[in-house]
Amino acid sequence: MSDRTRRAPLSADEIVAVAWEMSGGDADAVSLRDLGARLGVHPTAVYRHFPDKHELMCAVADRTLAGVCDVADGVDDPVEALVAVLSALRGRLLSRPAAARVLAQGPTRRVNEVTLTERLLGLLRALGLPDADVARGYHAVVELTVGSAVIDQPVDALGAPGRAATYDRWRADYLALDADRYPALVALAPVLYRGAGEDFEFALRLLLEALARRGGRG
Amino acid sequence: MSDRTRRAPLSADEIVAVAWEMSGGDADAVSLRDLGARLGVHPTAVYRHFPDKHELMCAVADRTLAGVCDVADGVDDPVEALVAVLSALRGRLLSRPAAARVLAQGPTRRVNEVTLTERLLGLLRALGLPDADVARGYHAVVELTVGSAVIDQPVDALGAPGRAATYDRWRADYLALDADRYPALVALAPVLYRGAGEDFEFALRLLLEALARRGGRG
DNA sequence: ACCTGAACACCGTTCAAGT
DNA sequence: ACCTGAACACCGTTCAAGT
Image 1 (cartoon, protein in one colour):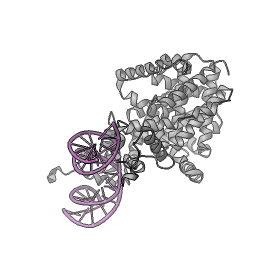
Image 2 (cartoon, protein in one colour):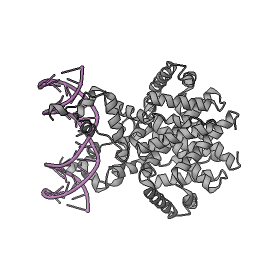
Image 3 (cartoon, rainbow over the protein chains, first blue to last red):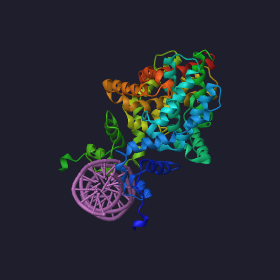
Image 4 (tube, rainbow over the protein chains, first blue to last red):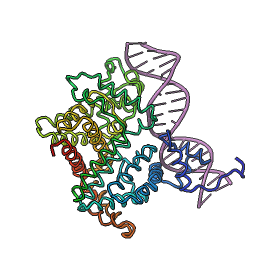
């Protein structure tokens, strides 16, 4: 490492950008040693910019939320806008499991998350709900979306053929059970796991339409 | 270690029982070294009974589900029975985060989970839904319950006073935002985070009543 | 058959030292 | 001011060796 290859000073933004890149795709963990190597810096240099790894990962998670709300721009119906934003959120969490795990442990209250929360609350208000129901509806849709993303992520990461094979295997396992002890499971095995994305949207619409009905917009 | 203190041969059940005890309470991780110490055995001895740590934790997670269905015994109304089982499930996941993390990564298809699935499907069928909606309703309530548990767990672990303080702080943070940029957030801050358990039950009943309505039992 | 010892290839984090 | 080196206290896992 000669002087002319010595890098410019680190910045928090650069660290987050590189960590964010590393967290994409299959790699579902970022180590500080790998991160240091990609930054061309000693592994412990990031401690000058973040107090610990968790704070860094919160920043990475928040970067994952940047611009999710934009998918609702120009969508007039609040239910459709909510479906668009929350499906987009789920998609981002699926493709970035490390971020999903951070966000699944409670709110980070960082800028993109706050922007997203504002948008969701605004859209839920547009359903004509009383404030208390807006708040509870917000918690409901976030819990459903995060739950769906963390449960579906491992299978989602397998890609289309792997997904189909996995779901086939699970259905076969259930079908092979004793029908006397597990009648519902054996009967319903063929219709379980028919597309995680569709199942999510079904649940989300059920929730949103129930909320809309409470708001007098049903 | 004299011969007379040398322990009896390990069994998979004993390993799971001790790991399950260790995973309770505040400790949200179990290391094989600690586990070995509590078993009075070399850390790597568990590899004779489980192929890797993940398989062990799946067994621990399944132990966490034992008997959850029992809370529905004697409850006639299927909606009330579903609320009872899923609330009990959420409670167990809250008190055992290591198990929650395993179950949040997809189905284990072990005995207690299968028993729980059978019960949930049976109860959803009792709502009079077509099979496809039973399956999608099942995925919906599981995603909501697991999402609620993983999101609420860290704050839940603080105990009642810590919970209240945390929620107060979050509300105060939102209230302090610029009301022009974040109108809904500032307006609704006072009614956010009003008891995670109540919020969960609200969302769950919304979902179940929407399902019951589809089944002609609304 | 069942378990141990020693090692391998990792982690996050602290802190004195360098420039 | 910013980063490095070295160390600390951990991880899960493998595999040859012991009894």
